[in-house]
Image (cartoon, rainbow over all chains, first blue to last red; front, side, top):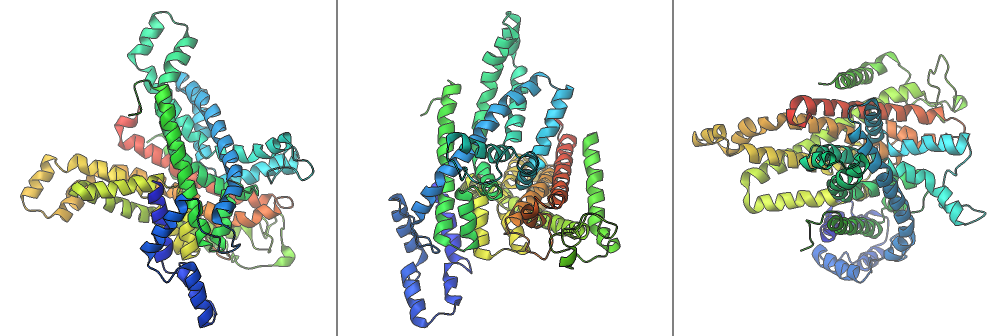
Length: 300
Length: 267
C-alpha cells in the first residue's frame, strides 16, 4: 500500500509536464542548468531514481526540501506530532460521541429524536469543514472570546491547559468530517443487531434491558463499525489539511500546502507517503482491535 | 421518493435557476472593484454588501454558483466515465485484467486522496480544468465498484448470453444490455458525486489551489473573508450557507433516489 502510494506519486510528479524538469524553464545559464539537473539527479532515468529514492526512504532519508534545503524527513518529523494530536483528538471525539448517538438512534428508531439527529448528521456531512471553522471562530473567539482562534499554544504561557484550549476548536471541526459517518454506521449496525434472534433470547430470558444493550447489542454492533473507522482515516487526514489552514495549526497539512504552493516536489512526495503510512498503520491497529472485539476473527 | 427528497430537488431547481438567469437580472459585474466602497454593509445598491475590494457580494454569489455547479457536475461526469470504464472492463474481461484493475481501485481508495490532490495541483498548477481532472481522478473508485458488481451480476444473465450468442460484439453488449441495468445505481452515485465534488472544489478554492480570483467561486470567496472575519463577518456567512445548502440538497436527492430505486435499502 505504501509502495503503491509512493510509486503513484513519484512517477506522476516525474513524468508529468511541468514536473521537476520544469526548472529548465527558468532563466539560467547553461552551466547552472547542468549543475542543477545533476544535483537533482534528473540526468538519470526515472525508474533508477525511484529505486534510489525507495532505498533512501527505507533508511529514513526522503531527500531534501527544494525550498529550505532541510531534509524532508526532518521537516515532516517536526510537524508530525501536531497533526497526530489533532487527528487523534478528532478521532476520539468522533468515536466517543458517535457510537452512543448511533446506538441511541437505533434504540429510539423513527422517534423525533432519531429524525433530528439524522438531520444533524446529514448537515454535518454537507457543511464545508473550513466554513464551520470560520463560523466557530466567529462565535467562540470573536463574539464570546472564550477560545483562541489559532495556533497550538499561548504566546505567554505554554502549559498543558493552554494547549488543550487551543485544541478544542480544531478538534471539534475536524471531527465533523467523520463523526456523521460513524453515527450512521453505528445506527444501521445496531438496528441490524436488534433484529437478531439472540437479542430476543437475551431479552426473554429476563436480562435487564441495560445489560442486553451493553453486552449484546453494543458488542456485536461495534464489529462492523470498527472496521469502517479504519477506512475513515484518509478522509480525516484530508480534513486535517483544511482544518490546519483555518486554525493556523502547524501540522503536516499546512506543510503540504506550503509544498504545493512552492512546488517543493521532494517535500510533497514525502508527505503523501507519510500520510499513506499513517493510514496503513491505523488500518493495522484497527485489524488488531478487531480480533479483540470479535473472538471469531484470529490473526492468521 | 421521500418528502425531504422532493424538497431537496425543489431547492436544487431554484438554485440552478438562480445560477442560470440570476446574472441576467442582477447585472453588476462580479469583477468590478470599488475600494472606496469596500466592506460595505447591505444597502439597496448592494443587498448583501461588498467585499474588501468593493465588489458586489450578491453578484459574486450568483456568478460563483455557475462556476461551483459547473465544476461539480463536470468533475462528477469525469469520475463517472472513469468509473464505468474501469468497472465494466474489469468485470467483463475478468482474469488478470480484473485483478489488476480492481487492486488498483482498492489502492486508490486507501490513498489519502487530499494529499494526492495537492500533488497533482502542484504539478499541473491550479485552475478550473485541473480541478475537474483532479476531483474526477480521485473519486471514480466507488463508481467503478458499483459498475463492477452490476456487470458481474448481469453478464451471465440469460438475455445477455442470448444477445452474445446472436453475435452482438462485446462493446455493444456492455453498452446496450449490461450497463443499462446499472443506471439506477449510477444516478445515485452521480448525485452524491456532485455533492462531493462541490465540497472538494470549495475546500481547494478556499486553500487558494482551486478556482483562481478574480473568477468567483463560493470557495474562494471564503478565502479572503476569513481575514475580515472580525470586521465583516457577514462576508463569511453567505458563501458557506450556499455551499451547505447545495451539498445537503444533492445528498438528500441522492438518498431519496436510492430509497426509491432500490427497495432493498428501505428498512
